[in-house]
Image (cartoon, rainbow, N blue to C red):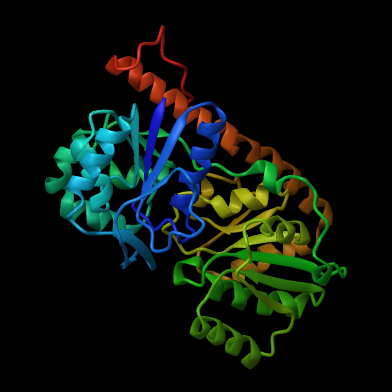
Length: 385
């Protein structure tokens, strides 16, 4: 098949949806399919050879973060030209109703049109509430609909009812699973608690820092390692809070390249995700789990669908620093429990491998093709529920 993967987000900026699109493309190509990635980009350097850049991204506040999307309505002609030149069998648009680029592809594509809904944010619900009358026609152009989690499906379904095939985000098990030597600066016998994420309010770092104040007082052999990009003002604010509270052994590692991230996971004994909400699925949890790390996370819908409390980790009330501290201390004190949970976490992560996820998406394409009669098949490939 020839597949067009459309993302509304800036290809030059790392993010969950673009990572999802790239991993699908890599696995589809490995399976012998021809793939193009169509998206806006603010910088052409480092883009994959199969990328088609379309549109200039703009920074738009969304759900407690900043999304960089192409919002120009003048995309109809270039979209029609690309569709005529490429003649895709499948056009798979990601976040199909949130910007002009995927909407224009739905307007003009005669291929099998598939949409993946990633968001589970309150801002997404407001957007759908405001735009559903305008976007009903585009929505009807979708032959198939995927949601990455039940949380994402529940957000979209009240505004655009229908069947949503739940196919989750994947995790690069082959990258995170193999045992790697810990980083020398973190290999000193202390218990390392790892946080990975941007310094946005909904990521909950402030609650983790407050929790670590209690953890450190009770268990001096602990260290908090914070991985994630932040602007100078954000970083300085957190550093000042740490200094004012005389909190020791907090390491702000800054941005870490994806290739190095597994080393941080294998240097940690516990992974912590104190997010406050608006998460459709816990990709950061899956990466930690693939590395065999037990997880302490907020009990929010997107995370509770990934881990079971007491099995792969511990779930605590969101925005509750005391509950977070208690769960962390429980695991700091119990190496055997950490090991048991880590083993279960690794086992659970295998179900989310990109090999499995990409095959499920392909099977869905084939089923839709069979139903539409556009690609003759003896029978549709089975699709997991």
